[in-house]
Image (cartoon, rainbow, N blue to C red; front, side):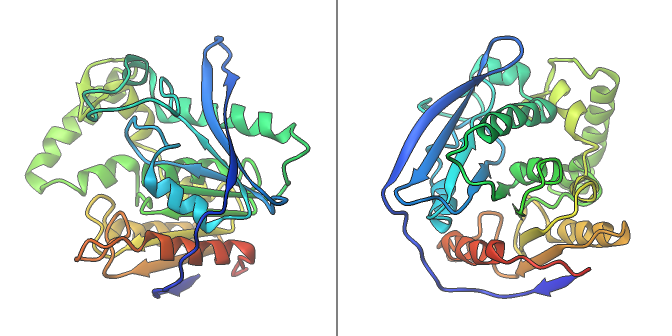
Amino acid sequence: MRLLVSAVALLLTLPPALAGALTVERGDGSVVHYTLDRPNNDAEGLLLIVQGSGCAPGATNPNMAMVRAAFANYATVIVEKIGVSPDLVIADEPTDCPAEFVTNYTFSQRLSDYRRVLEALAEDDTLPERLVMFGGSEGGLAVAALAGEFKADAAILLSSATGPSFGEMVKATVPQEAHPHFDAAFAAARANPDSREVFGGYPLKFWADIIDVSTAERMARGDGPYLIIQGGQDEANPLALARQTVDAYSSAGGCGLTYWEFPLLDHSMAPPDGTSRLAEVMTSAAEWAEAPMADC
């Protein structure tokens, strides 16, 4: 296991790209929206970018644009969540989320959509075989689940190491006195996994599907290589849980994990002055992805 504590100062801008908004059908006939951007030159690889929580389109997320910029010579794909299209305008989350998203979005459903898109792209012989995955926050959990299944050449998880489970990660972000309230809600979700009763902005069916999912356990199903990037000031995904994820993965016999810890950065890779360092961090992550090394 390698622990790298570093900061970098490199910037990379996105060259002109050819963008396309595409769809693929689900089994019920509804459509998954996704965006495929191709560089003007021959692509060196395909980058799957997996956004975090919420219903705002990933295609217009400025942080996702920074990730794309770091992989300027890659074709990049962003898959929108159920009920969301690339041009959707969300005035206020979560109150403005589409009804289809509110009713049907779960972690398992999200993974199913990614599988459909990746399987469709595998049939496109104009795309390179090299596959890199990036996931931020909740999206990192999806990458942990998909990387081994699709034999990704590299997988990057930013601010998304959940510790024992997603539910424990969520509880770690609230005061101790609120834990019984969360425990009760999680118990209700397990007892009623199809319930549309809302807790914390999501139906209980969402919670039932994700609360026991562990980043380390999903990563252990594949061989890596993985890169976990964690900010020391992250309050949405606390540092202690990231370290627990690294330890759990190692204890399970996993290898191929690189761990970067940035003590002064928060969940979005910004220091106390609020100036984002995401572009620099992602430039370093892109360099890592070109030649990731396993420890065993």
